[in-house]
Length: 149
Image 1 (spheres, rainbow, N blue to C red):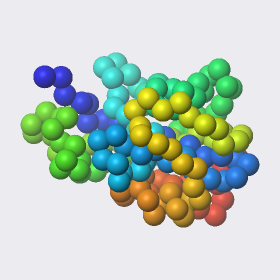
Image 2 (image 1 turned 90 degrees about the vertical axis):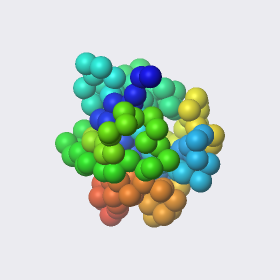
Image 3 (image 1 turned 90 degrees about the horizontal axis):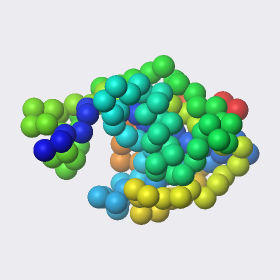
Image 4 (image 1 turned 45 degrees about the vertical axis):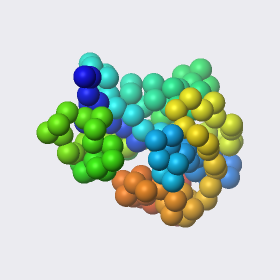
């Protein structure tokens, strides 16, 4: 069995014109809303993973759209939710997550390939609906009060 790498990225996508955050509904837990996430592939750096995962999960091509992906230069170690541990090697209980921000000029409709639905919501609503404490912390830290442009 091929296990997931316990090193991943979190990419918080927001619209610069509205300040709202893009949240995605997981297929494997319909009550779980989150930002773009994904594991690093072999020989891949977090920045490369973030670009790939945004394209895979939303259809947004950062390079083609001339967008600026911001590396927050922050990572957190967190305990993997028990319901998702089967994806990892038997002795893996924690994951290292690297944080990124992606500001879009305007809200756009993503092309979903790995999620059930999407919604653009206020910063406060995004923090409220995500089940991931890390996701909530990243949104609060980088988008509350003075979101980057």
